Length: 411
Image 1 (tube, rainbow, N blue to C red):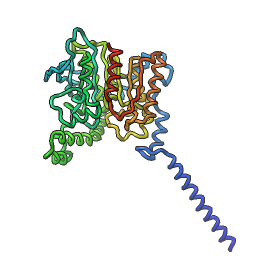
Image 2: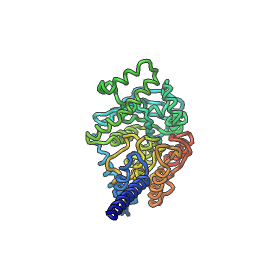
Image 3: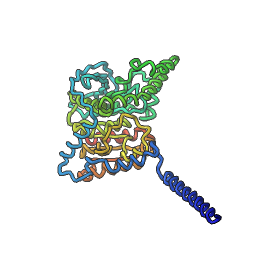
Image 4: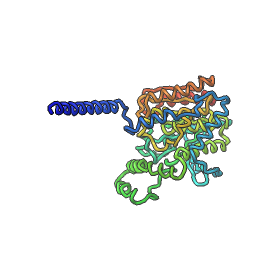
């Protein structure tokens, strides 16, 4: 009897110890997993993406024809972007003309398709004697939805909140104006959800806007703009849900509008159709990546503060806008693969080492991919990736480097 008691006691102790070991092993396994924006689901998604990605990358296999690769990859990307509303006449209107120092600024409106219009600032340099190179200045996001095109060119009586914004992100300089003074025709278009295309609170349900309207009382202009930006930011998720339900993508809507910006420039006699480039910071950098990659009419690209790989973004991506995501794209093309679609044409990528939106590893991985593509095409000099020890921004030094790049390849 005592023997059986001792045996049962030993069994219970052994089972307890074994359970402790299993618990500690399990805890250790969890402790070894990296933290992420999706917690314990990250290993699952990372493992899946690791086996199903970038099948149409230039580096995925030895393509017999660069043209066939480019045509195949662009067709797939256009299908994934899933926004094809059909063309419509531009029907351009000039709303305002302002003579500035070194250029003339036109506020214009034109059709994007049969259902959408946008406004843009067109900057024409003084004393043009022949068609000039042109740049599409693609504005950023920054949670600042009230304005778009106004972030790049001087306007009359800008509110303090806009002045501070430009100071923080651009060292206080309107870089589109500077490009115009250097002889470039520049177009600064509003993109979907910003500026002239911004959300209209009066068309939202009262439930969504009751608190917004209450807080407007007593606010100055900058305060009202700040309140609007908060409202628009909160509604990005509703926009994304509805856009996906409608069978399209937000980035598809954005890119269709940006490609019409090229159509607009080609309608202008001041523009040399063979010398068009694009530049942008942050969301503008994303837009520049896709516009450069998708449209062969763009001859030079500049991407500022939006370069990474999806592998790095899988772990941490919570602070990015809903506008950037294209369902299933990673199966076919990584983000740097999109930019590579216009190789061997010149591309400058500028990264910010203090950028909290992207990891240094992601920046370097994207650089390695693009450098390998340009090296494989035997034109390494047409790709440049530079790093600046600054936060998420495009300061004057970065602007000067971008201007030099554009002048090198377009003038």
